[in-house]
Length: 121
Image (cartoon, rainbow, N blue to C red; front, side, top):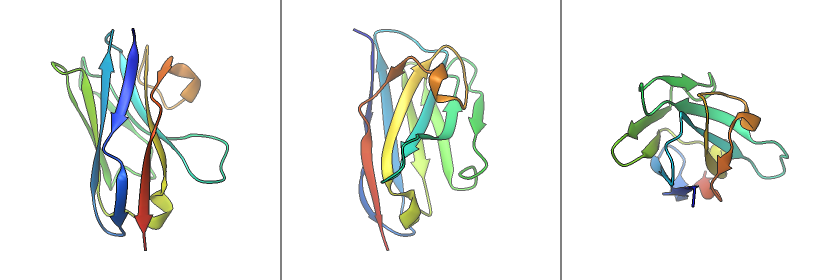
């Protein structure tokens, strides 16, 4: 069974940090991306993506100074280190696997169930 699974969400104070994990199983994806969906918003916002094969990354400008993506190819796992968190970062964070590194959600074929991140002021 092919799946991706997020973990590591939680409650953190503004200015704090969290590290999310995304474990893929059943296959190796060419691209793994992180998205988030804020309360009351219909669309998922792209954050960053990585190629586990090459290590290449693609960041949205809005988070590139605070968020860092990394990957462990042997574990087929991707990490999202989030620093200097703000209340507006509160959202459900999703990881997704697909055939390429992309900022477009429809590129990705397999999605996790999401992990809640809440940043208190």
